Length: 322
Image: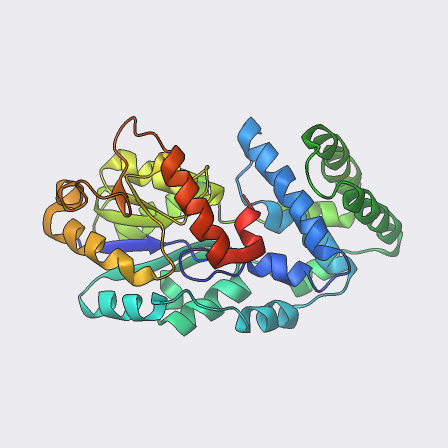
């Protein structure tokens, strides 16, 4: 019989920090640039651009990290300062003690994901994340590319705050898909494969197979657009999809919603799943509003309002990212 399997998104459920956002904060105007590119990422994901995965923000910001000579040490230094969500370390230790196989599936760069996993007591072999050999990528920057990147920065900063979706799409389409591919950094952009969207779903499937199970045996915990495909795949396969402090992109694909500042509040849900499967969870949550069983056709407005409030409390500026 397959072991109990849980797959956590990292940024949100386990740690409130968005590492890439904070790394970009080392660059003048970097937070604003990140927010505009993050909105552009959402627009591309929502329009269904072929072969585009949500979370590709982490690839799109790479040229600017390279331009400002940031390094692996910078990513790790920012990562070391990241808080863990209250109760995360304790819950993971308890679950592992009870025989659960705990995995992390994260869009985060490997420098952050693996370092944080170690702090949480999760083995690196149980982590799926974005490979990011930044030192090698930096070799692709040529002197002639600098002016193009500096102009792109100026243009992107003019688009902040990111409200004009049409202009964001027009300007960034030209930069990322026409101008940048003519440089060495265009090859870098094509090479970075962010662990988001369908790649997260496939990673959950692979982790389940490795333990002799399927997605029907998986509990997936996510909060944002990068988790939507994983939550949907797990839910449709008969597993348990949990939206934790989720935004409007993740909630519709989950069976359970929990808004909390402490990850240990997941424990009763996980216990009910292990004892009685989805029916056990539904029975355990009957009549509750938080956590709640979403079910088919549930009006999500009140749930989303609660999650938005708690998400902002827990994640601060990162809460506004898709």
